Each structure stands twice: as structure tokens, then as C-alpha cells.
Image (cartoon, rainbow, N blue to C red; front, side):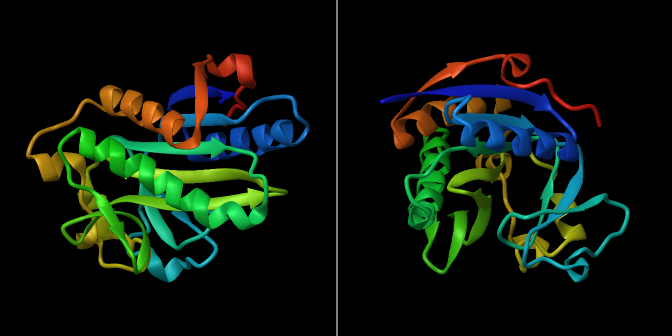
Length: 219
């Protein structure tokens, strides 16, 4: 079991978190840090992956950032747990298994809170009753991963109506809160998610403050 870092960045602007990821990928490639899991929330933002276009954005009032992850359009906002693992893969061919393992982390965590989440064999992500609960979109640079997952805990789902999330109508999205009929402690969900991540990936996570990993660039 390898040691790894867990960093809680709290609520952080998307571009700032992206800069942190890019810097950590470089440090991971240089062997300066172990595998690292960033957990955080973003203020309201739409991101477009490599297959996304502005045609997927139905409301121009939200900020839009084009990024290098896989996938199309998605929304990030308060109440959504976002995870960016900076993980060194043994081989680029492991990417498919890596995505499968990220799904497994979210499935186990959701089930621990009483939501019967599962996969849909036709597409990536985490689903329940035909609704999408969590999204996966990753990028890999020289076998080191970045970007990751976004899981709707207490997310305001009305924002998904402003885009075509992953090519779907916004009504396909759901949240832990909607499925359970009551809010879920994001702190508890974050803690459980970190535990499941460590279990699935065979890591020993050590919580470290953001400043001990990297000074966070100013926005």
C-alpha cells in the first residue's frame, strides 16, 4: 500500500484549481510528491471537454472554460463534490480501468448513504434509475492523471437546464439530495469518498494542508 496525499481545497475558482492541477502534475512527474487526491467545490461554472462545443451551452450567463479533459459540457457549483486525482499510472493502457475505478469509488460512497448507484454500460459516469448522479472526465499527461469526477450531493440541479450535460437534456441529472429526499452533509460525503478512494486504489491517504503541497496561485 502506497502513501498518498489528500488535500481539501474547499470552495475554489475553477481556473485556480486547474492551475493547481497543472503544477501538481509537473511535481508528480518529477517525483517530488506522491499520488494526490484534491477534493473541492467550485463556484458556478460550465466546462467544455474535448468533445464539447458552445452549442452545448444554452445560457450565456454562466462562465465557460474550455479544458483538456475528455467528454463534453458539464456544470460545477456549490453542493457538488469534485475530485481531481493526480495519480501516476503504470501504463497509459490503464486509463479505462482507472475510469472504472473512479466510478467504483462514487458507487460505493453513494451506496453507503443509501442511494443504489451503479454504472450504465453504454456510457461513463454513475447512474441511478436512469438518472446521472456523477460524471467522470479525465486527462492524462505522460501517464499522470488530472481532472477527475464531479458528484452531485446537494447540487442545485436547475443549473443543468442551462447546458446539455454530456450531450443529454439537463433533466437527466440527479443528486444525492433528490434521491434521498433530504440534504446530505457534504463534509460526511467528502470523508466517505476519501475512504473509498483509498480502498479502491490501495492507498494510505494522509491529509495535508493545501499550502504544504503547493502555494495556490491567485486568480
